[in-house]
Length: 114
Image (cartoon, rainbow, N blue to C red; front, side, top):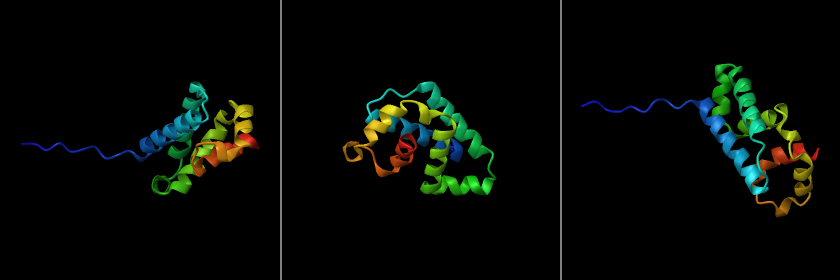
C-alpha cells in the first residue's frame, strides 16, 4: 500500500494567495469592486520581486508577517494598484474607525491617503 505524500508547500504560492486574500478583504470591506487587472498585476509584481530575492530572504519573508506586509505594500504601490479608486479610498480612510478593516490594512490605506 502506498501512502499519499502531500507536496511541500510553496512559500511563494502561499504568499501570493495571502496577498490576493488581503486584497479581496480590502476592497470587499470598503464595498468597492476590485480592479481585477490591477490586482493581477500587483500579484505578478509581488511574485517577481520576492522571486528575485535570495533564498534566505524569501524564507524570512515566508515566516515573518511584518516582512510580508512590507512586500504587500510595495507590490500595491509598485503595480499602480494604489492609483485605482484612490480618491474614494482616501475619503473613506478619513473616517478610519468606521472602516471594518484590521490595523494591518493601514499599509494600503496610508498609501491612498498620501
